[in-house]
Length: 202
Image 1 (tube, rainbow, N blue to C red):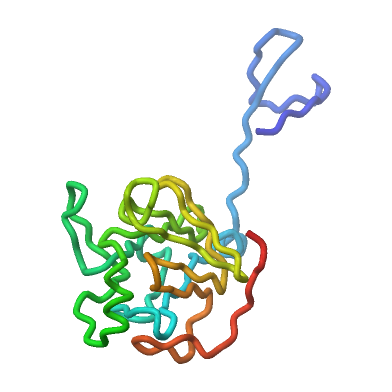
Image 2: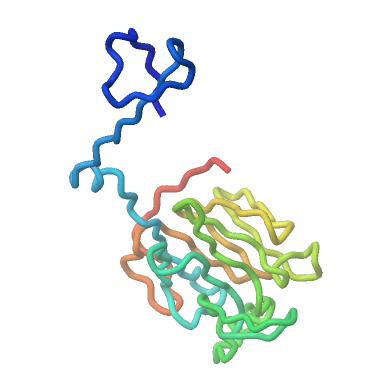
């Protein structure tokens, strides 16, 4: 909305009187954005990758591509689905329940079937604890570690912004890695080889 003060003798032909001799208004349609301007305004959908730190546990698939153009919530938990807490939950980032390596299987068992959610909001990528991943609600811990400083998620409503290089600790020992660039060499349990730029501010 634009308000302009102009002399009465320069009023547009199609004006409307509100108070005769004192206040008038007229409408003009704003010009349409050109195709080039629309392309500049269009925001690139947020994306990232979740992989697992070698030796800390195991994922069904790694890395997992987080893509805002595909969906807004990616659920994390042990096993593909659960009926805990009164409703069916289908996980997108699945901690393995049939891990044959006893060390990895022991780490995996401390992760809840409903641990946490990756949430895309306003084209940014966040994490929030689910009931099973919130100690305040009787679950296990969900933490975000950045440059050796750990932040525990203490409720199931707050969104915590993820940054390139963040480590997400699930339960006692399973650690997921968040990257804004696709890991160059990440197998089932492979840590990305390419170094990541870590932002040290929470």
